[in-house]
Length: 225
Image (cartoon, rainbow, N blue to C red; front, side, top):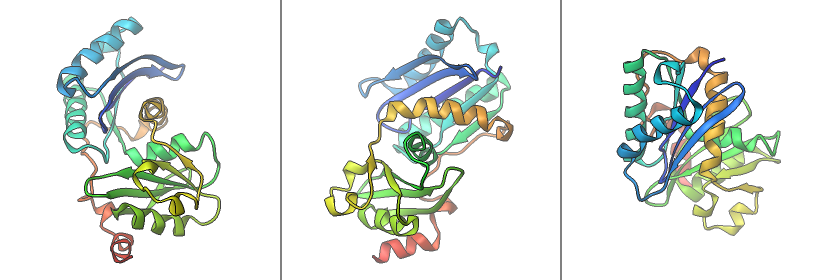
């Protein structure tokens, strides 16, 4: 079996999960009162100790590449890249919106509008169809979500930072599933194991609004709403 170490620091809380095809073997979670750079190496030691495994046993490293908190996400990605290089193990980056979509698949077989809040009442929004993301938008949260909901059609649900919308009329358009950050870590393990054939030895990069995937026509339309 493949032993995967998964790292998620994309929000105020950080999570380290160790697991394989048999499920989660050990986890460590950090609150907002502990520095991410201090937490990560200790958390890796702790999950390995709990699972009675060594660093050399790790086969794959996966990391949530965001979008999320800029400093925290970069810290997690940098740590994962360094560990991948030091151990000579492949690394896989999984974006936060895909994790939100995959989590929602546990309660729906339909389309999922995934929402991750950003600064200044903006948000990252994408449409997850059970396989991949489309209609990626970065812009004012309400306009961005409305735009992607229009693309999703009937039967879609909202997953992520829905409380950031503060718009009952908008959230009334679709059932909602809150952020639940800790619930994303097991999804990261699942996606890592499913996507291990796409893992590589090259460093992964954090995902943010400067990425080409967020500079499409959808964004321009969203900002005009």
